[in-house]
Length: 236
Image 1 (cartoon, rainbow, N blue to C red):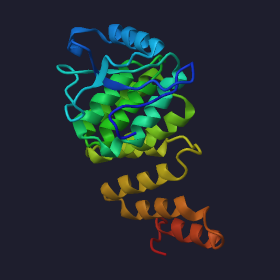
Image 2: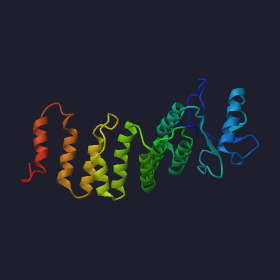
Image 3: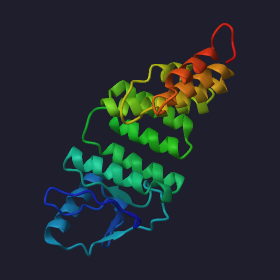
Image 4: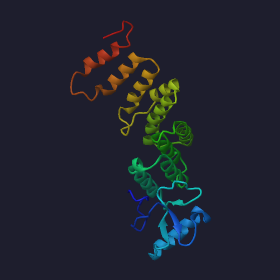
């Protein structure tokens, strides 16, 4: 997935590229996204793709150059496009990664918060912390499935920590729902937030407790040692 486009599978079983395009003889900015999708689908049906060419992959300015076309006749295809974009996200520049994900988010066929969540994650991974925080909050207001809700708690809590909003981060992470998709991550990030807030004994206790269940033995001893870190007597 390194050629500047994504390939979710369409209903007919053929890949639908997600790409910034120019239609033969025309600048892509002369068309709405909906018009480009219609023309693209006609080209796919006729197997005449000669009129489609990728715009310069180095140019991430979607508003003035080319348009990302997302072929999403179903939510499953949209999810596949999201997965494919994340798979190649390390190879993208900051602005390009955000622009690609923003277009995917704008074309999401679902009405819940998953599009905002994915956009927040891209902002987050590329270092746009303030923008990520705003999108996480929007995703929460729109509602999420259990897995994404659990992942959001970890990611949003980490973002709040990075923004210096430590008490908010701690509150979010302490209430993070348990889910197999996040494992002990909420407790690990909580430990980091507590440490940043100067609550170092609590941070160490939480970090230790997050790992105890994975130990093949010594679990009872480790729990006692961890609990002693924040006991009135203090120490181990």
